[in-house]
Image (cartoon, rainbow, N blue to C red):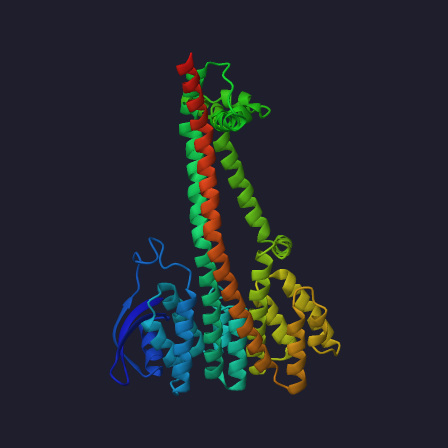
Length: 439
């Protein structure tokens, strides 16, 4: 059963939270093991509407910054000598994210039952990544959990910073592009047809219009007619069998634009589902690595993530082969992950990691050279951290530069589109009006 409780800690601090237990007595016994004195215990009952989660409970998502804060706080509490179960219970009660609160309740229960912290985290892969879980396991085995959590917090913070920069750089062009597309189709559907009627009324059916104006009118006509739908074999026949007149009229009169948008939506859904398959994901990631500019950003992010993650795992006592397996899964690109998998095979056969990476298609030579220096001096983690710092700075500069370039380019394209539409419409009207005046 799920219970909500209020209690006081040994130092007199009030806490509240929720936990699962067989009954009230079992919950009381569990709380007393944590040196917590229960004051109020009640059944959780039906879920209330969450201010963050809507009608269906808390959202199944934890922000990266929430994870950073949790990791740093847990590291600090363990370093201060606070027992792990008490640390988790305290962080659970202080969590403002409803789903994080729910996750920590289950993690606390698992740890109290004797499960390792890494195994408890592994049950929530949408919150704690494979890298996170494996580093926690390594910290538990090596007795340096507080130190590992501190490194994890730094690593997650770096990832959050990079993602934030990418989102900020993409926000402006996405908004401008969306507004431009909506405005274009609005003009094609509602304004150009009326202006076309004006042009025909002024110049007559045989009026000669500039080619760009005629193209604009043809596009508009294509968008509002239903030629594609009615040309589909048997569609017209089956639609005419619809017994309800209104629905029959709608089916027979679907504009080409609506049909194309619906078809595009179906294709998009299919492509997104295909990308989630192993084969589709690999092909999509390979395509990204062949796309100009995007390739550069992805490679720099992957190298920075590889360097920092591999360094953290190596310094935690994880073997090279295990570290390569975990690091590959954390890069976010299946092509580079496969390359690391092949490198791990060569390492297993007795080669140093720097040797297969020196022949890599994606890792630059400087990475292999620096890694070779780290292998010779026994300071691989230190060297890789420097590589990570360098490439993270490179990513930051690159994204800032792209954001500065994209804005004027989008403005130029938007202005060119508006100018073309204006010239296509106003130019013929002025010429026809002049001809009428001369006649």
